[in-house]
Length: 158
Image (cartoon, rainbow, N blue to C red):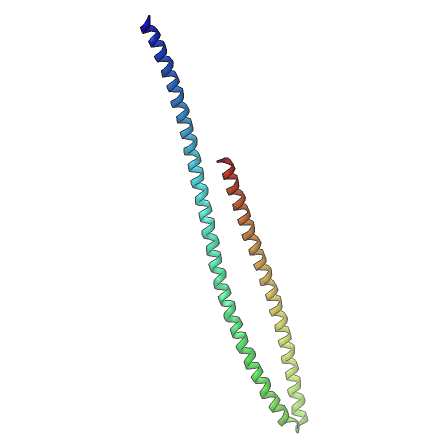
């Protein structure tokens, strides 16, 4: 009788251990699945960050090119200023010849019109660049917001 009672107790203990082992295995499987999901999400985020870094490098290169272009424009403006100074000297010399002066004035008017057109085009280009930069900033902010929101959900689950 004592051995029967002991056998029943041992079987009961074995069933409970089996239940505990099964629960442990289920928890381990769930943790492994979450670990893999987190690894995949981490890899996706890492790839997105690398893409953003690449975009930033491209933008930095573009800014460097634009700075060079501005420097060239400044040089061109300096050359134009020098040319204007030369023209002023020439105008003083050409006052004696009215016919030649009228021709030169017509050419200058055309140049000024072209410069005004060029300035208008440059203003439009600058406006487009500002819009592009604002859109990129919005995209980066949206990405940051979505990344922070997503990481907040992970913390809530944990």
